[in-house]
Image (cartoon, rainbow, N blue to C red):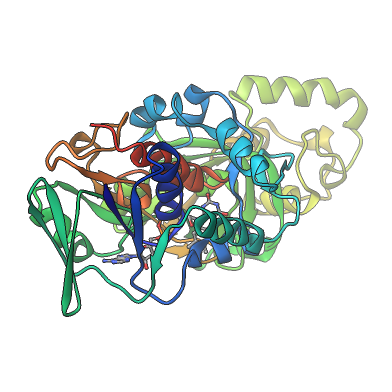
Length: 402
Ligand SMILES: Cc1cc2nc3c(=O)[nH]c(=O)nc-3n(C[C@H](O)[C@H](O)[C@H](O)COP(=O)(O)OP(=O)(O)OC[C@H]3O[C@@H](n4cnc5c(N)ncnc54)[C@H](O)[C@@H]3O)c2cc1C
């Protein structure tokens, strides 16, 4: 059996290993258009490669994918994070988990993953052709003829692992084969808030804020980082991923409402103040924040609602107390535009999952044609979930089941 893998990235390599594991006598060729194999693996995770996440429950895991999560649940029951850790360990690459669940090689070096893959490919006799872009693919004799520059070759089965494309035209050749495409859009970006005073707090992190996008049901809690152009941090990045389509529709102009305390109601916040009041009533408001909030943010918010920070709690009028609670729980910012997060560009969109069997990764439109990785309409939030998507879909595609 001759098998072609189109794309020499994470999903392409992992598919190739799986083909050899399940079909040891098959002849496998990886076609890579550039002269750089595994280029995204190299730069991933700031050069450390966040390989996967220490979340080992398929249903919990699937909740980290704004697009494709529901479908992936089935796939994770076949190959999940635990299997990734085992796969690498068997090949002498140990992964370690950080506090937030992200898993990296113990070497903290993405080259470890690349070396492991290149060694595995050589041992498994996988042929790798660089600078070999596939221009066209034609169904013929129950298989496919791949057309390269000036040459062509026939294969019994083909796995497409060409990654995401920021433009719809990048999917044209797959559309021509009869597949439907979800239009590509960026996911994982930070919010620009031009002209707002909050930028004076650049570098400050509020550990547990809740950010809601007005006019939607989208809301996330977690750390918020103030940057010199607006806001970033896990809560913002999660919102950007889950809201990728909706925010693009609004041309990235929308309002966010921030609850800096992640306290559900005015009453609950009032209770906390009342409890503390005995201790702080004679203290200056600036020096006695009853909540867990960085001092600089406390001062900023007091000034924003024009409360004299040097006045004492005892003198705070009811009206001013309400104003203070309102800004702490419902602080509004006008977002105008987005900024890419540390060049970690992930596209949402790609081959619609309704065209794919998630337990074989075979196309429902073209027999003997399989898909893996970011070419599919699957994307995860940061934390190693995008690579896990590539390992899972690559492993399943490589089984070459119908
Ligand atoms: C800077 C950066 C950092 C990241 N860090 C992380 C991280 O730490 N953890 C994480 O989980 N995710 C991370 N991601 C996301 C992750 O890299 C991707 O989700 C993952 O690489 C997708 O793998 P893939 O094999 O599907 O696609 P790709 O890695 O994009 O590979 C596709 C390959 O196919 C080739 N190709 C395309 N068209 C053709 C063609 N017609 N013929 C032949 N070859 C073709 C391309 O040249 C490419 O080499 C990061 C992304 C970026 C950009």
